Image 1 (tube, rainbow, N blue to C red):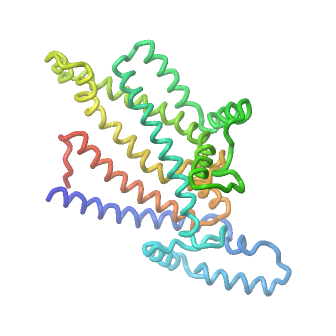
Image 2 (cartoon, rainbow, N blue to C red):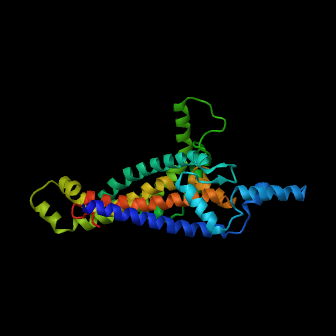
Length: 328
């Protein structure tokens, strides 16, 4: 009963926040200077009368001739039914153009997330257990460097090393231009293009996650129940991986939830540098072109992901710590 009340309360909270943020975002983007209709028609005004007719007709078809409150109601009602508007940049419905970038972003982030946690969790446990050792100090220096370097600097270094000094990997695109081949060959070509952006994301991610896991392990290993478990004669592996690590998972759940949300969010900097056709790059292009239907769709998508991520985080806390209960 308490769980059902909790989820009902969070659902109401999500709905209220969703509409509140949608109002703010809609009016913010509508206040940005620029006329999307003129950007669609261009500046070639050979016949001013015909141009004005086209302008008025397109403005009316896009609903821009209405007042802002009416435009908002029309936009939000269509969005809730799956109609995300018309892209002035691509001259297509938004829903038809976001599928491919979203797929590319998910692929890149899933691979990056897999390797980040594959490397950082064991390394974080090891450095936490052997803190202040030579290994720990060496790893800490490396993680600080990886965590502190700006993404674009790491990307430029990766390009210089693996695309110029050792020309192994391509520096842009999702696939080779004009590529023809089987499905497996295309997948391998995509992985080949994905290596450099994935490497940059992994280097930045490992640095932060290792430090979180290490700090959590050090705190847990100082607890009295760990001393008791060792005093009972339990093997060190059992103490670390059964007793200590499970309790150290609580702060790690927060990181993992953020990464799961970022799987759909994309990386604006990395996707722009490597011309990876993902959601992040699409967002930048849409902002530059005043394509607010695309921008608003992406922004509201992120809002829903963030709100859902908070619920997932609470569930994750309950799974790793029985003392945490879902209550209203």
